[in-house]
Length: 95
Image (tube, rainbow, N blue to C red; front, side, top):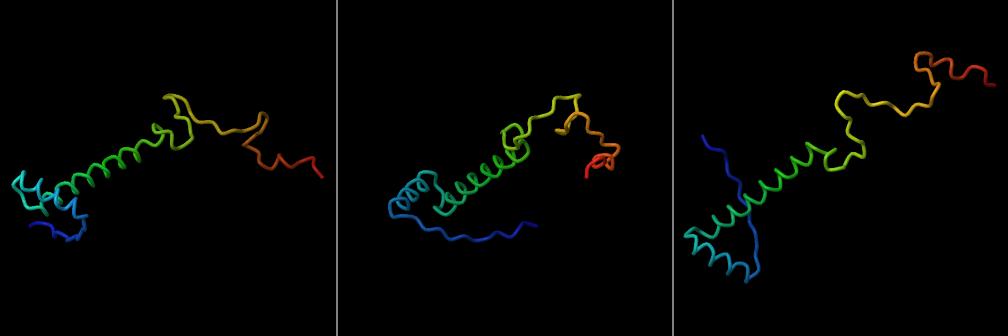
């Protein structure tokens, strides 16, 4: 069972269309088939590149978070003397 194929209509300038006809004739394929192959290759390359970038944002420097070296934990920017175990103690003594 094959997947349904969707149609797409594209328009080229006269010069580009003439070049496509010559290249298709050289490859001995229909011009539509050549355009399909070229467009398919382009889309697959762009999708692959997007997937690689999305899976490694820290490598690309896109997250602004420095990567954590193995074995260490991220620490939050907490001022010295701040005790997380007693949140009620923070406001005492203030009027």
